[in-house]
Image (cartoon, rainbow, N blue to C red; front, side, top):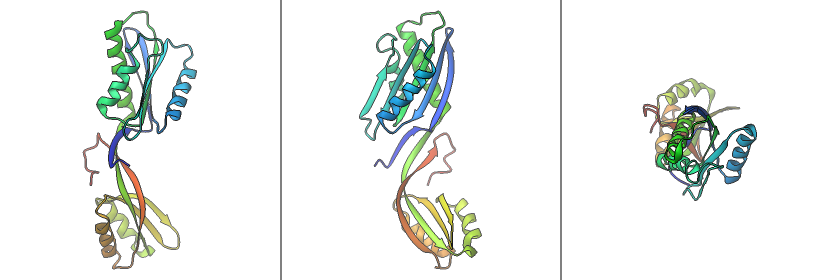
Length: 218
């Protein structure tokens, strides 16, 4: 598993007008080629009257699955520039579909390349980009008497809350940067006067909006 990578948020859409042609942009996070194809088919089915439904996607840890489809536009003028935007932004597991309604003015090869590239960029901006970082999931189990203090401390700590489970005792699970598991455990023991039961529960990706100020980084 990659320690960190960039992708889009689950879904986004946008629209731009270029020389009277409407470009409707749909962006989705996908984790398999089947999922990408299903998404493309859904968009096409919703726009059967469109001039073109062009698409591009890049999937996998090492970008092994890369596809671009011009859907009737001149070869290399639609899907390829969309795929190039994904590569330039280093976005993984991302599928883009651009639906074009022709406005009566031909754009030429260069104009189409710029238009579809711009449309892809607009869709990505609308969806939003996140950084996904692989972290450890660490839990502390303790009596309810410690809950208020720990909730307050977690909010201002470098550890991001994953989940709180309210049963006979409280279980607080946090994202912890790899290599800092013992720091988290010692911190929890200090907060509970040594009364917390600590577990390590595998790994999970923590998503951070890369447009943020960076305050959410470890």
